[in-house]
Amino acid sequence: LREQGLQFEKNSPVTILLELNQLLVTITKPKLLYDSKAVSQITLKVTNRGTTLTRKYNRQASRESASRPKIHHIEDMLNEQLSNIASQILADEEFREMIRQK
Image (tube, rainbow, N blue to C red; front, side, top):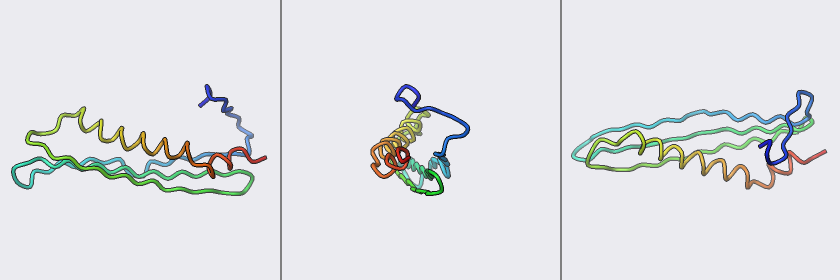
């Protein structure tokens, strides 16, 4: 973010809190196939001079496979969810406006 011009100062009127509520993958084998389910939940809170904006982001994904999933497949599921959330945050015009307010 610093490369994009964001400056970090202790006395800044803008605070950003990014809370990772849940990052979970469960793998089950109810019958013949393995079922992988990934859940990501993040809360974003931006405060600027007493005004607060809060957003909650939830993502879920599932995949089935004949063999036990390898760790890099599980990481890919979570990375895809987190990348999607990050893109949504950065594209949120209301969030961007909260940061720009003076």
